[in-house]
Length: 247
Image (cartoon, rainbow, N blue to C red; front, side, top):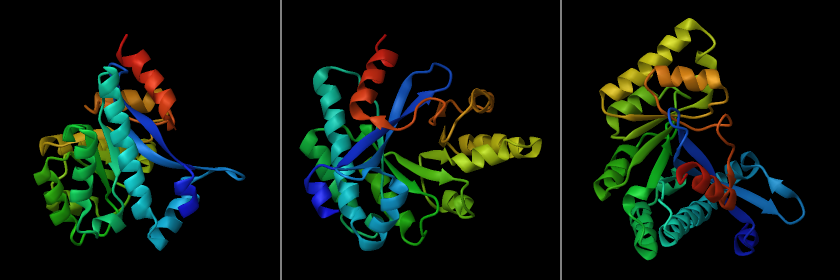
């Protein structure tokens, strides 16, 4: 893994976030991919859990954060209207006292506005200490996203105690609850409740036009998923960003 990092085998892919109404790209989520020289593309499901166990996830997180800052700086330098990139902050990094300082240092190094780098924390993370760290991040000026909302039982408690800006509705929550009228009501009221307390909503895992239309009817206009795009290489994302947003 250390050799792979030095050799540039880890790549940042971007999954576009779209406005359901306009179809425009309104942001992206940065995701890690491993292009192995002999094994080919290794699934994140195979290496992320291992890196979380052995601590290498700290280096991978930092790598992705820096790649995101580089890409935003590149858009600005090229005169392309930039969109925010959200990056994941692992539970291991949340235990590190310098997480806010580290990201601020990267923003300063690449002269990137803090509004263009958003931070995602999964709702399933151990809640102890998260509230204070999120507060530090918000006090510093970061936009905070709760990832995988609805995937576990801690969602509402995290929502009550921790000041997030955006909820990302988990793909399983969306697909499973849309199968019944009762489930659809739960999604509808989850979106309404979130908006009532001042939170924006992004739906993950949107795979059909039916899902997109239902979300729009419920008042959720931001979505990502295979209906719009799978995670793609940076060059392909840049091409789509020009085509979709600059025409």
